[in-house]
Image 1 (cartoon, rainbow, N blue to C red):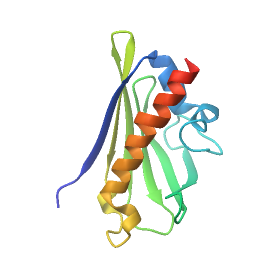
Image 2: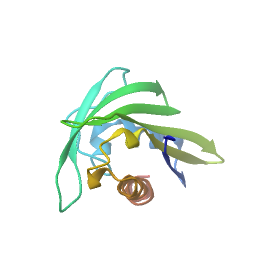
Image 3: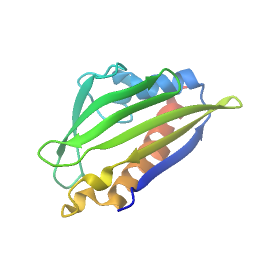
Image 4: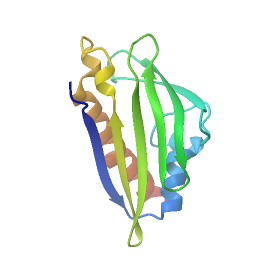
Length: 144
């Protein structure tokens, strides 16, 4: 079985410091991502949130920070309570002229039960494309 990777790349007309704050400060994250009770960019920090299809089951996501390179890279594990499998989400930030390129990668989602249609690759692709290309984009354009 080959490991599948989802990768979403976008250049934002925003300073890297602004983008880093957007992806690491819980009060900003809730405006475009998920409403987290707490979030810290500390390796080992655990956080959780509810999410799922608007008209479907809401899943408890269990995450743990695994890598932090300030203003460059953030990685965390992504699991679902009550289900096998673990995946990893990485946000990488790069200077591109006066803009910031964000590359989001999600690996390991194929470790989730294939019998559950909510865990299909198309749902992850759709979700991440919306989060980066619509939600984060709108947030950064509004808040710069």
